[in-house]
Length: 180
Image 1 (cartoon, helix red, strand yellow):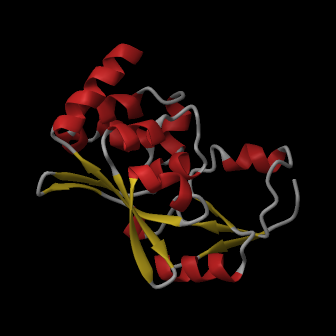
Image 2: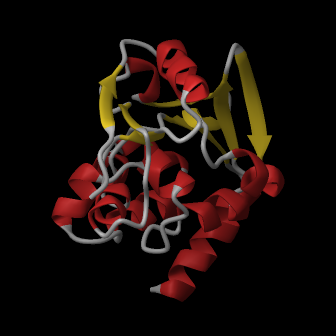
């Protein structure tokens, strides 16, 4: 493992400022993808910015036909959420099938998307559901559609996760049913 500096910030803006000041910095929440990459020297960040306790990255809410998921939400909480199961059952099912119980307790939605974790399949769900990411970058809050996800999600702190439902829910339910 290469040396790095561990940082914990109080709010999203402080974390984003630190990330901008140190371009080689990476965010850390669950660490299920990043920690093995560090261990095997596949990643060499200058700083690790812990985002696991940032309140703005927590929460599950459904309002005006849109499911909002905080980027630091662990898979287990998404899978167990009554709100998620009612709004987009296929998404709750997907979260409940990721890894084993230990992985589901630690690994997060945002980390899986940013690291393009093949074991989580959230990126496929974002595209299939027509999802939108709300990304905090500097003083700017960017809304990134699923078709532009590859260009914007990497290296930025995910502020809030948005999912649209209706027809996309039906498509995702079919996809999960075929995968199972």
